[in-house]
Length: 111
Length: 116
View 1 (cartoon, each protein chain N blue to C red):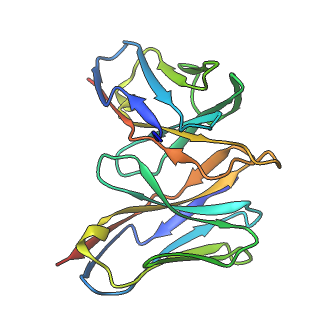
View 2 (view 1 turned 45 degrees about the vertical axis):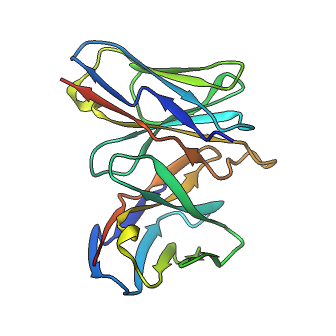
């Protein structure tokens, strides 16, 4: 059974800092890994998807890395802004159809 | 191009009642998945529909049922509501890859269900 863990549960940093969010998974035989953003009470917005054959993906100030052998992924956010404040979730497929999510990291960027 | 849409946005029910939530997938998508997200938790997979059939089901009781229509839209039905069913219900659409795996899932805004 796949289990996904995100640490820390909450993070508060001043504006402008670079930061790293962590995601670990128990079964390294994954097809891909996806990072999502969720604003309070809202749906999920896909940020980055890394295929199992890739080591990293970049989109603007976001960079996600994947190390399947160690069961870990990181989401790096450069030059953080108050608008980055949200909950960040990682998810991996279990079987062909089901996504297994972590609990999320609630990020607050202080002006 | 409209993304995934869900209705209603909010819903308040009392214990024992029944509820139906609706989802229209992103244009070109034929697969719909439903997730339940309790406050402060990650989403939990309920089930997935493809070609009008349930393909996979998570650890949810039979009170949770669904349906997919020929136009790929979907409904989630919950009977005999319990207080613990209060949550954000998310619908996601996708299209299966040639290997059978589901590629990027696109999520709707969710329906907030409150059971009193």
